[in-house]
Image (tube, rainbow, N blue to C red; front, side):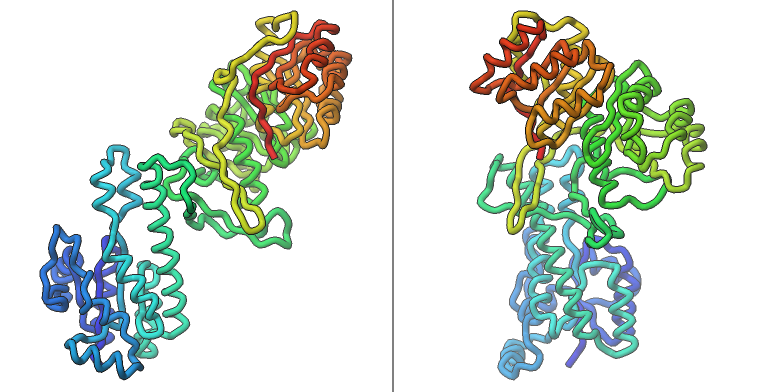
Length: 511
């Protein structure tokens, strides 16, 4: 039996060397279009695909390998006498190796000026069909979709004269992953084009970014995947300038910090521990903002993650250097700041493109045997129909504090209460089973600083006890969604203490 290989690739990285290696191993090379030209130009003899099909490439190359002479050659079972007889009857020679990679659909649609017509033309049809046919018949056919596998295949051919069944199965599995991912990207593009919100099936794909040492705990295996064409304002797209490899918990906390800091246009600093903000500050400079974030909770910030929305200068770096931190995220670091911070061997320094488009992506949450999908909570105070529910309206300074608290509370695990002034958080109560419990934690943390502060609640008050606790501590303004059957009790209690209370009509649960 002749040994034949079919090669048709868009990405021609290493293909000439691979084809020459196949020639040395005794293969005839069948090829198509641009691949055929590349190989011929580099001294590799090829058989044109039209010689195999007996039919020209037509429709501007849309049809060239979709032919029984190709698919019978890769789908035939070499040990099946009936298959052998049918191949002989139709004068078809088997193909033992297929090397195909696909039209660059993903890179095409990533272009800012791409048209729908360009996108459609880059949906490969013949390529996935050949790959799937060959992968199905991997007992007899070696199928390659990744140039990283060229060396392995050539090494086995040189050593054994054939490719092992184990390698063929591994390569076939990679093909099915590859074509599934390819179709998933197309599916997402077409679904968005058709403006379908909840299609009858959801196909998603992610690319391995790194294998992690472990998950939330050392006994749990974990890996980090990124979304093709996902947001560039993302930890998955961050550039690490210094420090140890990120861990599972680092990535989660860093994402939480980034989601909070993007709420602010003015210089802002966010400190996060266990995916909750422990300190948030704003100021005229990034140094002022960090000072406020540190002052907010100088205990919890130890071992935390810091996100800053301005370049880190030397003065700010020197302050950051004074405390133990796991990660610092910023749009950039000055040369002098890097010199200061890189003196700490393990401190991770990340840069993220803060100028990138920040269109919210859907949030996917896995459950046992299923997936929850929702829009991210991008609802801000400017989107709400704000109503002052009490007799007293907030002062200008209280409005600033209420707005700051409302930006932050939606990023705190429910039940959530945030105490703040117009520049920083003073106390955060997160993840409690009842709202007054969260308020007590936040008020206790704020301590004497609570006098004249604002309180933000992620959901309504079922009773007036939270308002009373806040009033007795010294809170003068409250922002909450409203909507409780007992709203009037809370309003009356606020009026009793002279508190200004604002309803937004929107809750911010975060589980």
